[in-house]
Image 1 (cartoon, rainbow, N blue to C red):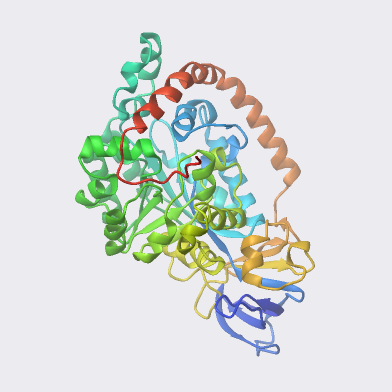
Image 2: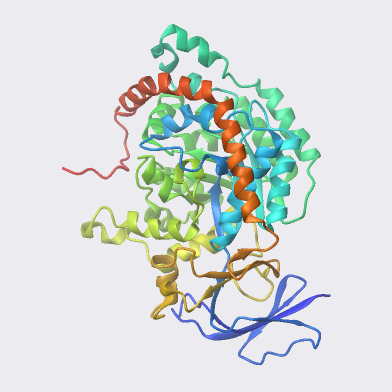
Length: 496
């Protein structure tokens, strides 16, 4: 038995909007007891001095992409569809060591910014591999982070998935994109089964399945993903109703919404997570809530890609479990959950005082980024600092300018914190960040390795970048034209 007693810290109390002094006894990574200063502890317990620190539950990233860690800063004024067009350039030619490095970069950033767990939808072309997923698992294990890792899969290419797009391309470009066709459905499903069979790693890192976007998947493929997840007790996660173009295409293909179609195929359940959900309508939300499902609200990338403003207030009203995510570094450029929470607050205000009822409170979004995200990940014993829960705890330095003076700890964590106050982080009771540094990490070596990978991948993907410059004008004009068709919900903020 290993025991640690945390002494002298102040614990965020969300309902009371306070931060009382609280000692915490951790035994074998689990919070055993909590109480006022002087809490009894075993004589041999290690003492963690939290004096001058504000403690809060580790933030949990409900939606990210570990393969995007090496793509930070590559996008500017891209729609979602342009981002998908750029995929072979910004994420192509990855070797196993690149997959490890990219994932480790994201994990390091999340931990240094107060995030202790994430739902990672990771991509490999043309199919997921046991080796690639093992590299992702090792990256999270080496960093000391909790994670759910889901191979992100499809059996229809981007150009085949959007009605008329392939025909809109010049013949020469049509031939080029034919090489981007994905593996047959059964090949990819077999690869997922093999990867799950070969899965190794700590209990804190678990698999899931991510059929990427409904119309990028045949019905048979989505059913295959459903069956794999159900057979192994795994979660399902998909990008649903992310952009207006997606929902317009979904309505054309299915005669109903994407979520309603997936529900008809039996994918929607308590273990189902909608990534983004910007364009979900009320009926979608009722269906999702009825199944006990979740939405990962990713306001940063939704804004950056121009996808719109998810109606998070309506989701909460209708009983949907709300999580918070950053999305990948290729479309949000960082992995900062403090920023994601703050952005969620800001965009909920975008429709103005006449829509005041839609405004999210800091307590609501802080709860979503902890307990809500934990539920989305299928984790029953994280997301709170309470007896019986894992000791995933963030310690903020109360001498940080963000927290001076400490008027309201909940408001300031959500609206003022940016990660610079993070002093230490525990995961499973083990200190993984101490004095603002990632334990065991050589950041200078990490920077060197990342720079070398960037140089090599830049050269390897030069042709893919050139192809993107040819495809972008067509995609950038065709997709907005398609999405301009009428849709019964509206999620863009129009300025007149």
